[in-house]
Length: 169
Image (tube, rainbow, N blue to C red; front, top):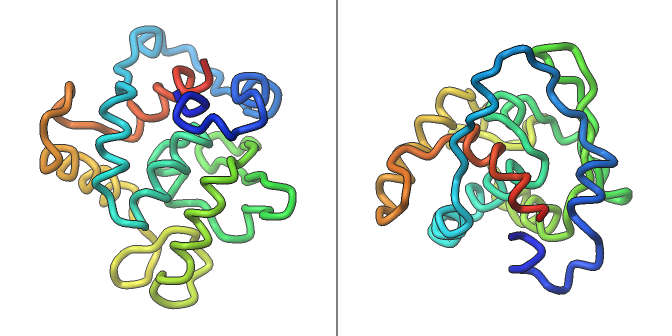
């Protein structure tokens, strides 16, 4: 759905995702029946968000990231010239890489202009420190309730991550 909403995008999102993204290797079969955020719900959240949360939401979708991965992302993990994310996932000590959309990079640059402090973390809390992943999850759930009229009551980053495949189709 990303390519549909952004026809100026000159790359094939699905091909890039399949080529660059490192996929989780899991034995948990519950992931075979994921809850996925709908296209409409994602854009309702996005269009009601401030610049920080727009950049977090699009970064999450773009990089197929969980809240923990978002909170662990440092500015040095982003190569703006080559347009990619490269970091070590703490959970499994594995490499996570991904191509960053132009729109994602533009939002990150806008956010960095208003971000409090000089933190090494890409996204920071209202106090300028590292965003706790639990705080991010709590915020997105509460925010989805405030936006209202969504098909799901409590949207999580896992749902956005699970919907990333839909974005590429």
